[in-house]
Image (cartoon, rainbow, N blue to C red; front, side, top):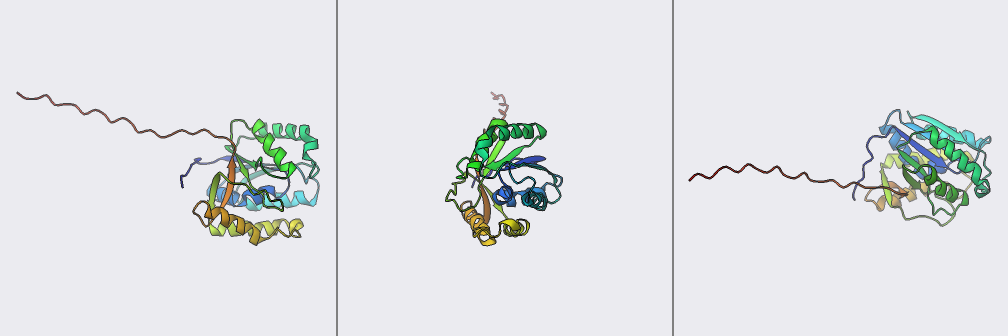
Length: 229
């Protein structure tokens, strides 16, 4: 498996349509980044849930998934499931969010997501973060819209298990859903692990990127000794 390296990260942006989207989609990656980059700046924007119990859940959850990180989160109150009707407002908030942070990587939903709020956000993200590495995470849910990831982030087994545990701990409002359990989350991360020769992994959709290929320096010509006659 060919590896791509970002180098050390100082700041990332995480964007979700709903509270718990970010943690479901990339909770293991957050745990890994925060642990390996102490003081990492995490700038977050969530479109819906503001002013409800879900906002409190999200604030506590993001802190739990980003131990030791500098976390700044904004939760808006766009009505759940009505994102397309609030296109202009969402676009404006994304613009404001963009100028408020300097991320090296941006994480959000992917364009193929079946939920209209996720899909709208995925389409708008690259219109604001035009010169950034934008990675689309997958959100396990009832809809049969599981994507074919183009990028994988291997996870240690302990990290995958901690992600599943934290999801169950921090989102009590969601545990009544029949798909919201540790076995489901570990099952998906195990599948993604199989697909990248790891035990567990999280899958992402690469929005757009450029690549620079390494080059071998030309050998220095050796001086030719004069021939004796």
